[in-house]
Length: 134
Image (cartoon, rainbow, N blue to C red; front, side, top):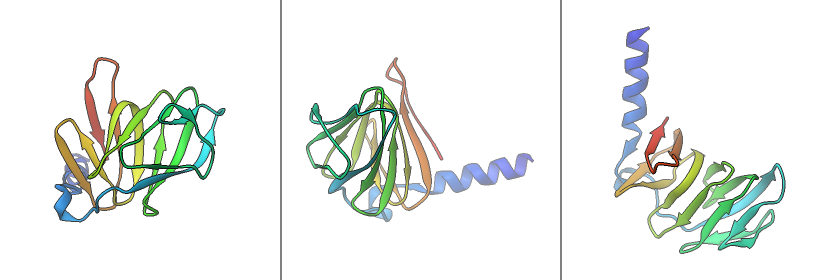
C-alpha cells in the first residue's frame, strides 16, 4: 500500500512541470454549465452559458458552481464562492476551489504550473493558504 501511494505521489508530481514542458498559454474560458442557481460572473457582471471570459478578465461564482472550458482543451469546475483571474500565461485562483482536467496552465502563488493533462484541484483557503492536489 505504501509503494502504491508513493508511486501515485510521484506520478502526480511529475505532471506539475513548468509551463514550457507541455501546456500552452491561456486564451479564454467558455462557461459550459451553471449549477445550483445563476450566480456566475465575468468582471462582476452576470454571465450565462456560452459566455466567454478572455485574458485580463475575472470569472467568479457566488452560491453557484460553474463548468468552464479553457481554450477548447481543458475542463474546469469552479466551486461556489470562487474567483479566478485570467492572465496571459495562466489563470490565477484568488479565492475558492477549481478542479481542472486537461492541459491548462495554472498560477499558484508565484509559480506557473504547466499541467500536461492530468486532473488536479487548486484551493485557496480563507486564511490565504494555497494547496494543489492531483
